[in-house]
Length: 180
Image (cartoon, rainbow, N blue to C red):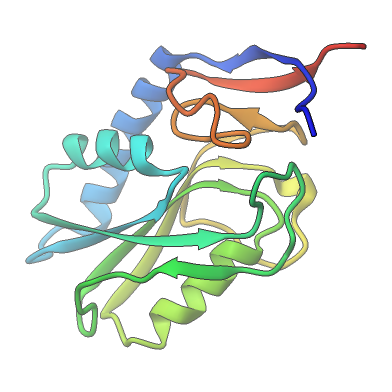
């Protein structure tokens, strides 16, 4: 089945993203001041650009780990079934942990990940999401920090994909399908 043609309209510029990440890094540094090491857990694949830029801004000792989840596949709609495709490698018991998510939509993925990681007894667990779509929320979850609140649009860029396309865009854009 052929994918419908679409264009991407810029929603958030690369400059706005960079400026917001600098601000978020200062807030996180203040919150985790004195930590011996912050374990930053990126949710793959959509957060990889965000996590790279964020950890470069943090003036804290950090360890980076990744967890891969899936709830979308190649669809524009969440299946609401969260699967763990790759678990973190390191131990987090007794450690400060920051979960980095690309976008909080229905909230099912972040809720699942929080419960999974809390069961491993971290000293502290906080979350950050680059994007938040509160109008789509189906479960009561909110990231500790949010980069941008966005409307109910399907977005791509800055690591976020649509069927494995558009991750390399330096900005966040909304997908607009072309008429046939």
